[in-house]
Length: 460
Image (cartoon, rainbow, N blue to C red; front, side, top):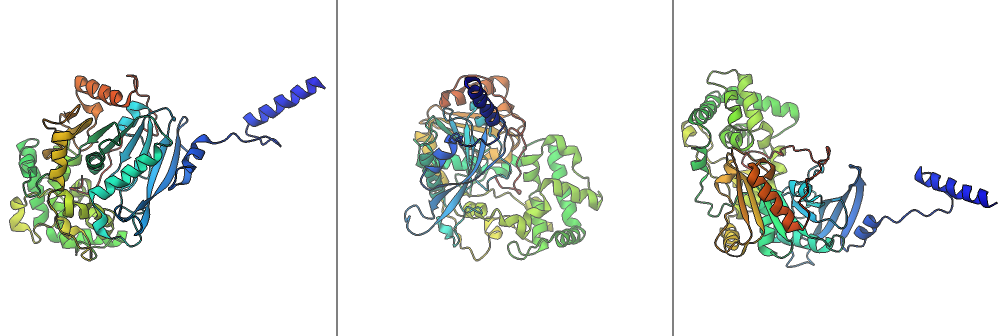
């Protein structure tokens, strides 16, 4: 009887290991899920498969539309959580836009082998109130969203926290620190601009000196060639839009205006996402229509200025036109061929039923805070990226903070692209801030794909 009893226990154990239900056996509690379920305001929408050693959850967190009037309605802010371990640091990744459809680890998350919470920015769908009051889309409201998420999740992840983001996501991370400087232990912002005085841009100066003169001249020449052949390109653009079910009338107005926007934006987009290695690919005057089309599609992307392409980014253009500012790049080299001057200004890219007016001062306030009180900040920019023309700048009162410039780097610049001594210094600093050992990060093929996320032209 004793032998049969032990055999029964052994058989039951084997069945459990094989995933076979055993009558009377209890499923071990899911500690991650139970901790998440206990957070007030947090909803677990589901879990997705991911690499061994990680768990990936889709979440929402209940936010007031107006943090100064919490009873006046709200929305569900969408998040993803990549769980590694309760005793690891946590990286709050501010996307600045929508959540990516595929979850990957940011560079700081890899360096720290940490957990990662990614936050969709307010008013980017679906993280938008049903009846949005667009005046509630400002940097303080978004910073307070992030503050509440971090406070709530500290009940689950009690180790150190850092924030990060690239481009507008990096801007968003810095704005959060300005209003809630003690929420986290450090912030790493990549390729993030700060347009302190909107009327005083340095983007023209940058675009007039980046790369070599022959490449800059070739970009102007291809723009002029495209505008000289406006009718051919416009007809092809209209046919392309019709075939794809794309329209122009709701936001930008018509296909001619959209075409000018695509052409005018080409140099900025070229240096933002491409670079000197592609100078030889710029079509020379007299190139075929197919060559022109391919160049502008690969550089500025024709769907960017359709209603459908613009719609996803209306919250950014609203923010740019009310607080963030925007790059006012000169179109003088093309002036004699243009029909729609200043087509790229935010007011032209937001539906006209949404009221907006620029309120200066917000970016100057952030700059003053960094220079006088900022601490544990790291900025990583690319030397060939137009957005680096107006970066966040450290000041005499900034403490334990660092500013790096990747030689020849574009809008995808990272710490790993820095020269070896600077890379080692920056990686050691990030780990020091998070209190982890100086050990190499282990790469995971699916989670650590290094694809440069593209936004439409002149979006950070």
